[in-house]
Length: 122
Image 1 (cartoon, rainbow, N blue to C red):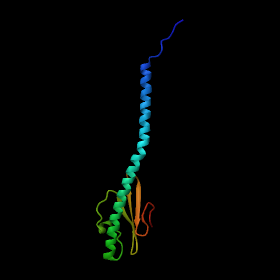
Image 2 (image 1 turned 90 degrees about the vertical axis):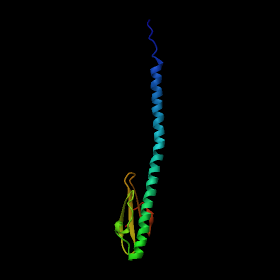
Image 3 (image 1 turned 30 degrees about the vertical axis):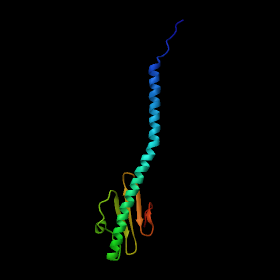
Image 4 (image 1 turned 45 degrees about the vertical axis):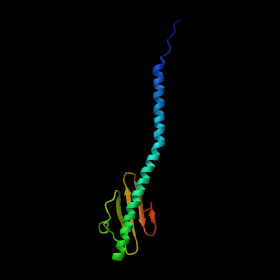
């Protein structure tokens, strides 16, 4: 009767350790990724808020000087922003401005009537 030798334990142990390490790394990424993404979105929202606040301040000064809100960021002399900013609408009584962060695909809008909102103003 011939006996076969048991399989060496070294390579099998290495595979188990490697699989365990990859699993632990995957779990760490799964836990950390949402935190990082939420941090980026929070930072983007703060940037959008700051950019729209600059537009609102400039619009208030423009209305005091001209009697209505401006449709032009150039006229308002709003400094270049880290986000895409636009005047969505403007008239004698109201304006709406929007800002968008492409990296997080976050949008925010501002109007004096509604304040800051993620829903587009009309």
